[in-house]
Image (tube, rainbow, N blue to C red; front, side, top):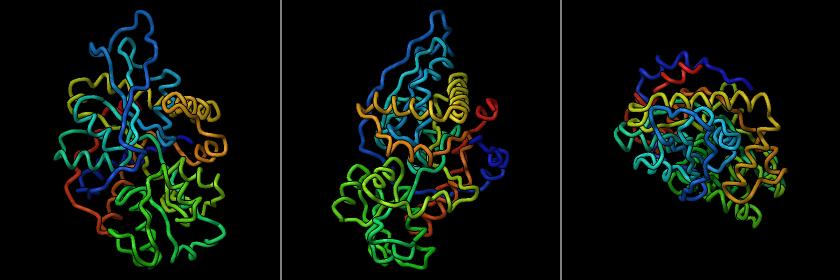
Amino acid sequence: MPASFALLRALAALLALPLLSLTLAACGYGSQARDSGAAKIAAGAEKIDGLDSVRIGYFGNITHATPLVANQKGFFQKALGGTEAKYAVFNAGPSEIEALNSGSIDIGWIGPSPAINGYTKSGGRNLRIVGGSASGGVKLVVNPDKIKTLEDVKGKRIATPQLGNTQDVAFLNWIAEQGWKVDAQSGKGDVTVVRSDNKVTPNAYRSGSVDGAWVPEPTASRLVAEGGKVLLDESALWPDEMFVITNIIVSQKFLKEHPKAVQAVLQASVGTNAWITANPDEAKAAANAQLEKDSGKALPADVLDPAWESIRVTDDPLAATLDAEADHAVKAGLLEQPDLNGIYDLTLLNKVL
């Protein structure tokens, strides 16, 4: 659906306030990155800022629909002209942040927790969030034989991807809102929170060692394919059913030295999101084709279709929801409070829009 830019207009006021920071781990599928190859450069195309290449990072995950589609369809390369678009595919946020810090990539698509971590651990010196990319794609999926209502979650074993990751914090906050008690560190209490890597959660569900999971796509739809039932879509808990799941970050050094290149990538991102909205079926196929190219395996239709339906692309970074997620972590006792003022620089995004 079309992106809403109300928060962009109000962002100056928001960023005047100190934001809270999550000292959180990223959710992901490991820690390795690899080059996904490069698209062809049009003959005679001019380089941007004299750059030979711009190195773009993203996850092999359907919540990163924008870069998946833009890579597959050549939208990044078209925007960059004679400057080669190079890609690195990551499995987890910390490795992408490390690559950004080392200069191995210039721009990346990443979730809120690793972006916050990367910014705060560097004392605000290594990155900026320059745009939004996606909302949604997180669900509570349960064994329908054991859990039939939200009240039935009490006393059950529910998986989250990692202690302190974005979904873990969201689940802990939801538990607290039910009036139940859980020790955040151990996961023990009225609900047992089991920290389980997304790769192994479907096996844990199949074996009966967990009764459900609060997880992102495509893990949620994998569980549904195993017989699970969606008990709650996290989007229902947020105003306008929108919350940040993926943002665009850039190295501060690269942003300062090559704003034209950053603007070109943002132009491609905005154009890609519009194209996805106008061509949802073709976009879904393009994203899956890129997933297959990057990982060697496409998602089956019974996983891809519901996962795709739950993701909403947006150019809006949804800054207010990032602040709310930080507040949830404060309440869970998993928070340090460094100042995030300055994490956003939306000058080029607003210029593109």
